[in-house]
Amino acid sequence: MSGQEGGADGTVPLDEIMPWSTGPLRLGRGWVVAPDAGTLRARWDTLVAAAGEERAALFQETRARGLGRSVAALPGQATGTGRFAAERGACPEPVRIAHAPFDEQWIIPDHRLIDRARPELWRVADGRQLFAVEPGPVPGDGGPAVLVTGVLAEGRSAGRPGRIRPLYRRPGGREPNLAPGLRAALRERFPDAAGPGDVLAWVAAAGRRAARGCEVPFTADPGVWARGVRLGRRLIGIQLRGARDGERPRLPGGRRPYVRAAVPARPATLVYDPEQEALLLDGGRIAPVPAEAWDFRVGGVRVLEDWFARRTAEPSAGTLEAVRPSAWPQEWTSELLELITVLALLGQLDRQRAELGEEIARTGWHDLRTPPAPRAARAPASVLDHHEEGPGGQLVLL
Image (cartoon, rainbow, N blue to C red):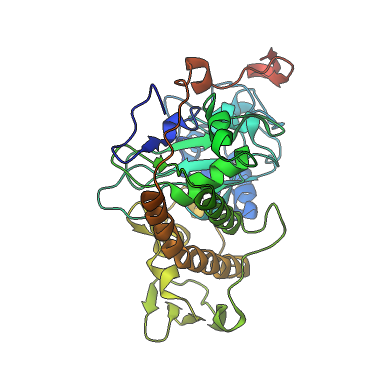
């Protein structure tokens, strides 16, 4: 892309393809997120039932958020904006969030509880939006360069903080977050392609991990472009788990994981038996679990181990994190089975991603000629027709 620094092999930094991005959310307190919504309601009830120093201790005040602070409501959320010290109401309805790679949990969407919630992301989160999450670089990490989610992404990363890039800058799938001139440059070679979803699919399939973040090569061959977009749409569809098209990911009948022995009430260890292709949760047993699922890593961290650890780590006594299910819920087992399926399917497509890279190198790179993204393209879009509630119930016009 002209005016921008690409790689020696024709790659383009993702920052020059999807210019608007934010850093991760900074929660400030872990108890506002949980694997199930019921736990969050129980934590809220425990907090509002406490008073004085006990409430302050449970809240875990920081410089950004405390019991005496008033802040604006998060866009699209009907929550209190007064001092939390006076809060006596019911818990706001928890919403789904991509808490970590391949781990959708629930969050209390109350701005008074989150140090840095990134309201600009909440403002554009809807049924049309997709978030590309670029994990922070980790030396030697061969995991995905970009993850895609349909729910608001927290942007957690095992390495340096990553970036969150919405596909659209406005609600309703309006104003694609793509560099000016990019789609026109692609259409010169691929007349029937280059919609916003096509570009994101290509990024998902062809993007590469690099020291400075994700870099994307663009092909000059229409056939390679079409194959790459199809592969990228398949990768994204698996990650969305049927949320947009209703087609939940499935392995072939003989390869679907099943619970062979029930998961105990409080599993403490997670072990993989490669010979039996079995996942062992103390006395619980799930099989078959393809090696691709067990070995799948993001940021150098094995996804299945990380998912399990967040549900079984012992919290400190007397904290709101200690308010949690008394036994392993059946819903967690169902989510684990689905996660195994997702990781196995993605792992099985790694070879196709590698072959795509080889095809791009063999057929030649597309030297995109576009102007550099203006500063305005790197900032959130202004919203001039939408009222939001500010601190203390005041209305704010954005």
